[in-house]
Amino acid sequence: MTTRRTTLKSLFALPFLGCVPPVQSTDPSPDDPEAEPGTPREAGFRLPAEWEDHESCLMAFPTAATGLTSRQLERYRAEWIEISHAIAAFEPVLVIAHPDEVDEATAAAPTGSEIVPIAINDIWMRDTGPLVLVDDAGNRAAANFGFNGWGEKYPYADDAAMKAILCDHLGLDRWVADMVLEGGAISQDGTGRCITTERCLLHEDRGSLTKEQIATFLSDFLAIDEIIWLPDGLVPDPITDGHVDGIAQFIGPNTAAVHTIDDERDDNFEICAAAVEILEAAGVEVVQVPLDSWTISHLNFYLANGACIVPIAGKENEDRRPLAALAEAMPDRELVPIESGQLAQLGGGIHCITQQLPS
Image 1 (spheres, rainbow, N blue to C red):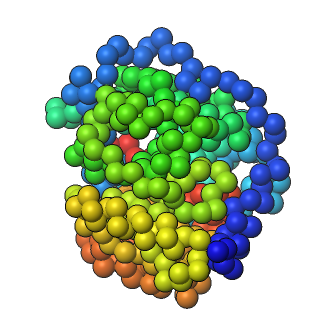
Image 2: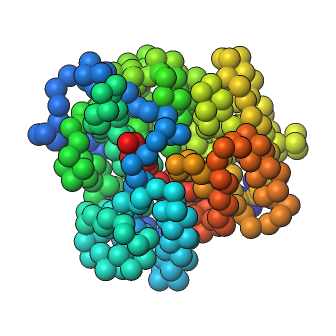
C-alpha cells in the first residue's frame, strides 16, 4: 500500500528527471591502456571499510552540466558548500570541478581544498568515483567498475571516463572490471563481507549478470568473500533501482544500521523488515534506525574521520528518533546533522556525493 510518506517521497525524487538532456550511449568502461593485468586480489588489495582512516574525501562540485535551472543549481550548491565545509572540519576535501567552473569551485570549497579540473556530468562521486583499495603494506590502488548513468537514465560519458583521469592525478595503479557497479550499491565491512540488493545488482540496466558472476567480480576486484543479498532498497527509487545505502550500512565490524518502519501500511515496511531478518540471520548485529522522514534517508550519511555527517529533513518529528539511534550506535563519532532536502529532491544524499580516499 502506498502511504502519504511514500507518495511524498516519490514527488521529491522525480521533479528534475525532465531537466536533463537525452542520454547518448557510450561505453560504461572506456578502454584504459594503463590498467593493470590480473586482479587486485591477486596483488593483495582489498576494499577497506568506510570507517577506516581517510586521507581525504573526494567530492565533485555541482556543475551546470546537470541541466538544472539557475535557481535549482544555486540551492544544490548551497547544500554542497555546507556539507563539504562540515567534512573539512574532520578531514581534507579534494574537489573535482568541471574545467569551466574551477573559479566557482575554488570560491565555494573549504579553505585549502585541492581543486582538480576534470570534465564531469554530475556530482554523485559515490557512484562515479574510483573504489580505492589498500594492501597490508599501506599501498593504495583502485578498482574501476563501469558506470552507465544508472542504466542510461542520465548522460554519463564524462563521468565514465573520469575515474582513470583521477587515478592518474592521484598516482593510483588501477584495474578495470568489466561490470557495471555503483559505489552506493554496496556496503562493506573491510573484512570480505558486503551487503547489496538483488533489485539493483541483478537489474537488466546493470547488465543482467548472475549472482555467481557478480560474486566472482566482487571477489577478484574488492576481495569480497560473502555477499548478503537483500531483496530491495527503499521505494520508490526511480534512479538507482534500490541502492543499499538508503536502507542499510555497515557502521562497524559485524554491525549494520538498518532503517525500520512502524507503519505496516507503508510500502517500505516489509522491505525494511526483510532486511533486518536477513542480516540477523547472517549473524550481523543490527541497529534499527526509524525511517521517520517522508523525504530523507538518514542512513545516507558519510563516515568522516571521527564524525558522521548525516542528512536531515530539518523537522524535529522526522529527525529526532533517527538521530538518537545513530548517536547511540556510534558514541565515538561526532554526529553532524545537515539539512539536505535539495539533495533528496534530486534523488540522493550525503553518502551519494562523497567517496573516501583511504590513508
